[in-house]
Amino acid sequence: MSGTSSHSPYLAVRDEWLARRTEEVLEPDLPIVDPHHHLWQRTGNDYLFHDLLADTQTGHNIVATVFVDCHSMYRKDGPAELRCIGETEFANGVAAMSASGLYGNLRACAGIISHVDLRRGARAGAVFDAQIAAGNGRFKGIRYQTGWDADPGIRNSRTDPTPELTRDKTWREGFRELAKRDLVFDAWLYHPQIGEIAELADAFPGTPIVLDHIGGPLGYAGYAGRHDEVRVAWKKSMAELAKRPNITVKVGGLGMAMGWFDFYRRPAPPNSRELADAFRPWVETTIELFGANRCMFESNFPVDKITSGYGILWNAFKVLAAKASPSEKTALFSGTASRVYKLALT
Image (cartoon, rainbow, N blue to C red; front, side, top):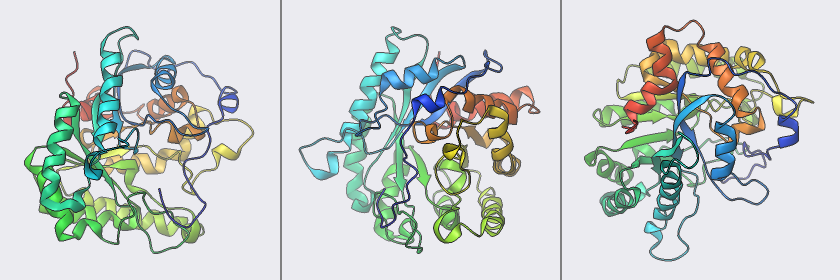
């Protein structure tokens, strides 16, 4: 991410702190597809395949995952527009390791959401084709981070977006190349921009659009003292967005340092019920508006790992889904993600 503020959701993960809280796994047989995690090598904050394995082997039945764009392992050389292919090659290599079966039944990176610069307009088509080739059937689409806010204290997305980028004619020409290839679009933005995604969904009604992290409600900088106001505005925008049937929502990302919760500042990590109670207003509202068949729980690891361990987080989701019907529970934990990302799971 870029911007002038020092505020960042990407804080250091403290393994010793996380180890202070352990729990028995709830519903250990329930199949889970984790539709949103990253893999990267960053100074003091590595998260690679062995780290993902350690997290997914904490007792929950994680059957597959989806790797999501994080500017990881881009090519150093070659045309600038093609350097993003390195990320897909990297994730596909991890997927191949996982598919060998040497690491258990998990199919890590069964789906890959990488990046293409849509500001190239129609020329983005060639990059999409290269991504598809590199993904060996696992490349499912892209994420384009358009998070922007007029508040100078808010960190804008690393793509350095201009305001209302999704309305830009050339950007939409690039999006049309994605739509022509029947790919998925992951949207990461902030809650005042949710209306822009509704417009995009109207313009491309046949294209699946996944809203990341329940729409990015802002709770820091100029929004810090306006939590009730933000929640009302967010709910209104989400209710309008829910009218678009091609929209699904990733339910998670609430462990980021976005100004809502301060668990990562406490002496010990939260237990799953504390997390569930804190997240409940956001989670229940989202599922009520969109329905379980258009919602999917996500880990957003390692970003959300500043708040809790992997096992604790999925326990919290299971607490939140305790009253769901069997079909709703299947949708929330694996079905929606498998359908939207067209995962070939056996």
